[in-house]
Length: 363
Image 1 (tube, one colour):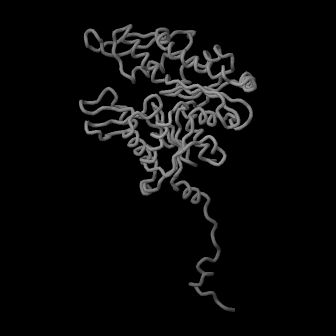
Image 2: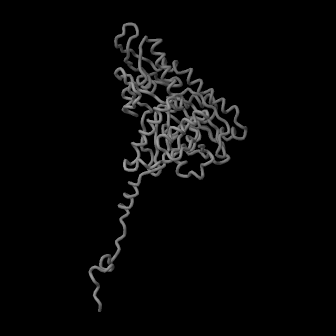
Image 3: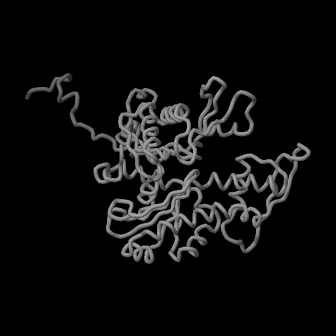
C-alpha cells in the first residue's frame, strides 16, 4: 500500500470544507455599490445604493465661506441656518426643485457621494439615476446632468419625480390601467396620470413645502409682528399645520424676535390661524390636481374613479391634505406608507432593472 505524502494535494485538502454562508454573505456585503439613485430635492437629498437600500438622507444645504469654499454640507450645514457668524452663509443650491447654483450643487453631490462610497474606491465612476421635476427645462436638465458628471459619475440618467414616485408606491405604471400620483415635495408639486409606462396627463407647479413655510413666516410677521426663521416655520407646519378644520384646534408657543422692540418674545399661535395662512398655497396644489384630471382621457378617468390617487412627498404629511383632495376631486385618496422616500425608492427599482424601465429614463 502506498502512503500519501503530507505535502501532496490530497493531504493538504483531504475534504474541501463548504464555504460558510455567513462568511459568503459578509463578503458580498462589503462589496461597494457603484449604482445609485438620487432624489435631489429642494429640502432633502436621499441616496439609495443598489442592493443596499437608502444609505443617506441629508438636507440639501451647504455652508460657504466668503471665498466660495464649501465648509459643511447636509445636516451639519442645516444646523447653521440662522446661526452663522458674518462671512459664513448657508446656501440651498436648489430652488423650486432645480439647480440654482451649479458650483455649490456639484460640490454637494460630490461630498454626499464620498460619504456613501468606499474610500478606497473613490476613483470608481458610479452610475446615477437622478430624479427631476416634470416641468424641468432643457437647460435645467443639462445642469443636473453636468453636475452629476462633474461629481465623478460615469453615466447620468434622469427620471421625472412623479414617475419615480408612482413606481416607488407600487402602482402598475407599465400596464394599461390608469394610475395617478400627487407628489408634494419641498420646491415643487408634481401631478401625473400614468399608463403604459408613460405620463398621459400632468401638471406641475413651483409651490410646495417651502412656500408653505414662507406663508407661515409672513403670517407671523403680519399678525404678531414676530420674526421667525425657516426652521421654526417648518416646526409650526409639522406640529399644528392643517389643510382642513380640526376636531380640536391646537395651540403652540412660538419664540422669535419682536419687530417693534427688537427683543425676543414668545406668542401663542393657533392651528386655525396657521391654516388660514396656508390656504393660498394649498389651493394651488388642489387646482393643479384638478387641472391634470380635466385633461385625462375618459377611459383612464374611469380607472381613477375606481382606484383613486396616491399622495407622496413630504407635503403628504400635512394634516387633512388627503381629505381635502378627496373632497375636491371626488376620488379615493391614499397616502404612501413612507411618503418621504417614495421617489428614491422608485428610482432604486429602476436601477434594479434598467432594461425594463429604459423608456422612462432620459440622458
